[in-house]
Length: 130
Image (tube, rainbow, N blue to C red; front, side, top):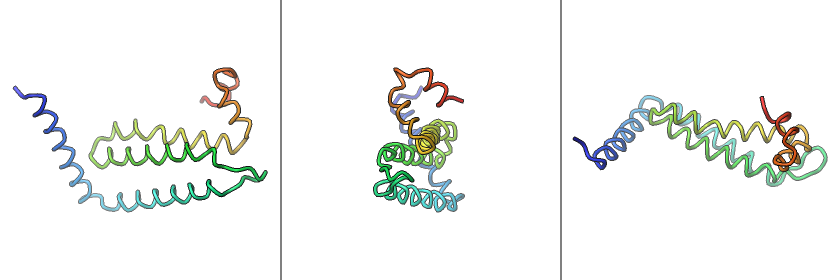
């Protein structure tokens, strides 16, 4: 019978083996992901100084971009260790953060609805579901 310690170290060992295997077999994926990280960094710098067509700051989108970047990194780590289910679970918030940013950019009223989602439930469900 294995101990909890054996199971944990065995799992960690399998992850390390999988990471090395992935790096050898799919080096192109790392380069593609590095490119994605660079694009997200550029988007963050643009949000820090950029303005929308009405001249308003876009800094309110930075937390969503940071969330998307963090979740993408965590998801890639899971994918790179052959844990695809975990990767998709981790990647979904990144996609949702991008969608929320798009909703806010399309119509600034959506930001107000999102901020007051507990009070404006009907509008929130209408604008942010589906």
